Length: 150
Length: 150
DNA sequence: TCTATATTGATAACAGTTATCAATATCAAC
DNA sequence: GTTGATATTGATAACTGTTATCAATATAGA
Ligand SMILES: [Mn+2]
Ligand SMILES: [Mn+2]
Ligand SMILES: [Zn+2]
Ligand SMILES: [Zn+2]
Image 1: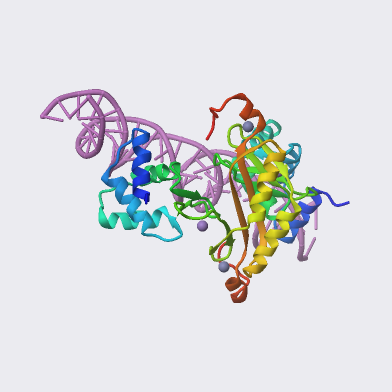
Image 2: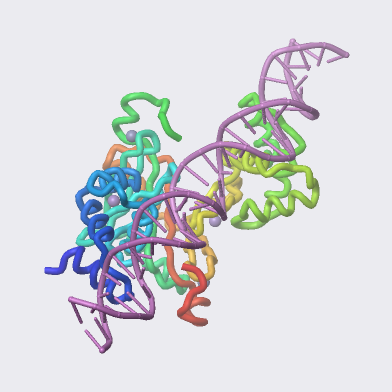
């Protein structure tokens, strides 16, 4: 049963890159989060364990984790990226509340199928896709109609 | 037959904002482009007509044009926004070649319909959506498999 | 014409991220 | 285990696209 650490190690080895304590710790702490994580939250938690770690190393390591497909980076509204675990996680798309920022995950097999068909029609080799539905969540609609952001 | 200029004027008036020569010129030159325009290209062409115009004014005006829904802003890969005319233009989504940056526009009524259904199921009020299919275009696939960007 | 106030251009500031660099750590070959 | 080529690190400067600041000016309703 291969796990994230082995996969990351293999990837690094394959690319002639090195397995370091910093990379181990960053993956470790990343995995301790659920859902969509922001760099900021990651950095805070990492510094508790090792205050000497540099923010550049965090960015560098996240990029490697994205490269080896353990992690996916999202750029939803507000300009800040979030990172999401992708290993043994089924593909899904997102509903995003533009009022409170809440996200809901969904999958729709037919939409996925049509995406492939569209690409075939235009001679495109589909590599990935991004689909985000923006709106107002149940909660926010009930409360007020003066949303705090956007 | 209302046109873009009248609509923009009305919008400004309604918001107690003012109709200025700069705003007129920016809209004018924006409309002289086809498809997806970058700030850079816009600014160049604007400076030919009036070298004294400030980049801040361009950003400010584009934001107003987006607010009044004459223009849509996209943030595809590479971090740079592009702006697209939206007045009397039918909604569509984009296929984007990650090799050469080419975009193809498409529409798929069923996908749009399912998006609405998904939102209803989760109690979301759908405001807008973003859907981008990323891949390699016909041209790029034929040429080489060492893509220049990404 | 007058005047409150919106707009402008120049430029400083900002946020998130990446590049630079000298010191240090890794790890394959011995 | 030692060695050494080279990858990595942390600090911090730089960068990019965009926004805020501000004093001078323009707009438009009265
Ligand atoms: Mn998710
Ligand atoms: Mn388009
Ligand atoms: Zn909400
Ligand atoms: Zn292409």
